[in-house]
Image (cartoon, rainbow, N blue to C red):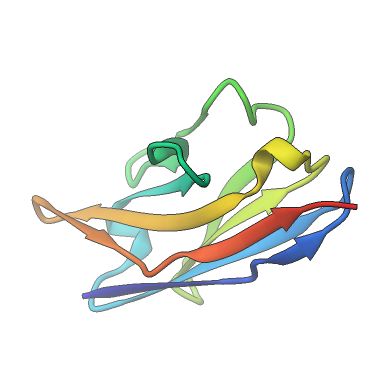
Amino acid sequence: VQVVESGGGLVQPGGSLRLSCAASGFTVSSAAMNWYRQAPGKEREWVALITSVGVITNYAASVKGRFTIFRDNAKNTVYLQMNGLEPEDTAVYYCNARWSGRSYWGQGTQVTVSS
């Protein structure tokens, strides 16, 4: 079981990025998939969730209305579309899968928002 993030990079304030979380060993449609982030000197914080049943999404207040989590079952991948990026969004972003009673983390992808 593995999740691998990609898509991070440097973007100017107000810009957009799309992060990908490619899963193997399980199907994203059978798992609760989350995105977390950790800024320098801060604790890791939860960002967004997409559930397996009902495809319910939920977001942290700090990103609601700017970020969208969605999945492509055919590609077995979960995405985080980030619009209106702010310097405060700078962090390492981690994908997390909760499947079969266990939690799996990726290695993270760096997002830097700066002019």
